Image (cartoon, rainbow, N blue to C red):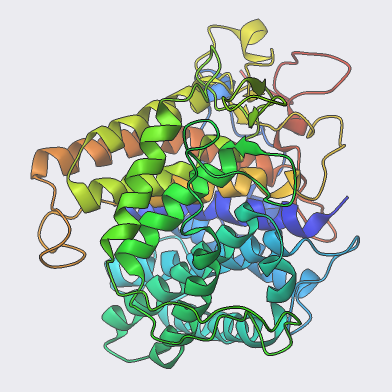
Length: 494
């Protein structure tokens, strides 16, 4: 089994916990025991019969410093095990789209660490890592991000791949731009600004692949997954088009570099010049709005409200007539960041309401709201016992693709739950502010997800290997066995 992707997705689960705590100012102002090997122990050893075990948020439900420590440890394990100084290594061979997602996780982790030190005067309660150490780590990891940009990312392979793969790269380097701007606003420096034009150019090259691919000749719209294969209007490609389009609209600084090639070693030398794309081009907003309107109106959810994988088109047909009912975790969340940003670009709160609905469906589909042990232990559509699962987790037959799905979900949940601005717009004269009531409502809704996120994070910690610190893919393994469903918690105490 590929462990790089499993470790990467757990990193962002922990960052999601930290982000909820930090962003919503939920620190507990007491010290906690540090060190995963001693602090976590058996998953249920600290439950003590307090409430429903499938809703237990863990022993430190609002200890931001403790989660900062866990995130640092997982990031350190990720690098010491899988980073060779230039790129991510794994056996079997690397899937380049997943490498882009792992790099995005690393970038977003630095954004969250920057938020932690800026909002809490440089030190996090309950953490042994002080502000100076965090800043040193930020600079170290940023150097690795630069190296991956210049030497590690196989952009030639992704450039000729499917439409979803290209958009993971767009989001990757938009996040890098966001990090540089956020860190510089905090530090009052120009750290990384020399890289922004290069990051923007790569995002532009890969967005250009999909920019004009919304096609109404089949299924009345949407993007197909891979133009080299039979048409398949799948959820992830189209969710990514929402999030990449609105991300480009808000964060892309413009690019007048007309070089269309992903690298100097790209073999096809017949591409036309890359057209100029200005900052905040209305085309980008139109793409995001048009895509989401199409997605909502084309029956992408099953009876439970979960997003299915997509639509094939029968020979001789032009409508989406063959629905693939498979449900994957990442299909439930990649649109969330786009919905949050569509609100910011338009002021239309229906985008936020759509997001809350999808999140509530997912939480309920893990058994979080079960009425008893028997119901909690049954498959609920996306997990059991309040713990998220993909179908392949328990039988341990996940592909490399599957291994990063849950991490992608939590990344975009995290981005959705960033506080709504009330005083300073993201882009003056272009984006919207929330009134205090809306901002408070958004924060309250996102705060209500914290217990479920932490429940999943503690479950993931329980799978950590004692010798390697590598965390497993099936987070619910300590609670559920394939032979006996459901089980009561391990070592419950009265």
